[in-house]
Length: 330
Image (cartoon, rainbow, N blue to C red; front, top):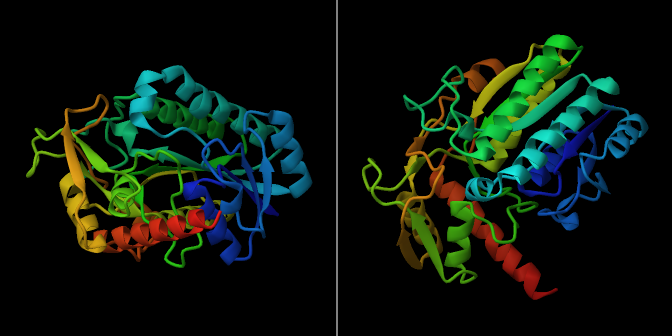
């Protein structure tokens, strides 16, 4: 049996592929390379350059490789972009997920893991937020992911099909062995942007909103190391294969850091300052998003190993230095 990873040439996807290979899994990746890179996929995994909305391609791959589990990481992820171009987000994140789920059911793939998001909560009434909180997304991105969760729920009720919907908080860092990291062009994730500024790739970092009701006026987010995140997926895969019921779980640490705290951590790691430009608030940015991660700990026996902002910043910085060295030799 094999595992299909959609979006496996991207940031989280490439880490996921490495984790599966480390455990001896047979892995195939489908990625259209819109933001990922072919070189990010380990040579031991098969890379198919294609679109998850192509049901013929997906179903032929499932049949040929005897896929028993799909880890669905493909999609669009930039909140402000979703506000400007909602239809593109509904196409990539919802319509194509529908096609993928339909193919999984048609081909008898019983196990499905979905990369959802904390954006489904919008601005939560209470922080930290648990999975039973009201879902009230404030951006098309969050809505597009929540609709896919609903499709999974209803599909599981109607078919021999089980799923895990994992709600990511802010994913950051890089593989401690430097096999993978965030290489996205024009990335918007704060730690990636700050590491680029610290290495001179960017001239400045923009901070959106300094008048939030937080200690320093900037938004609070729960940053989870990408290595700990993919471990949740690996444990979820084991749980599904053992026949457990479907589950929705938060992926975060339960500790929030402000935008300014993250920037300060990066300057300490880098040993240099960079320009910070203060801007107004962006639409779709809640004040604080911090996870209650107890369900993942309890149900999946997840024990994070890299729950430390300094470690996250250090690995992000190391990867940025590696990228700079790699690109200088191209």
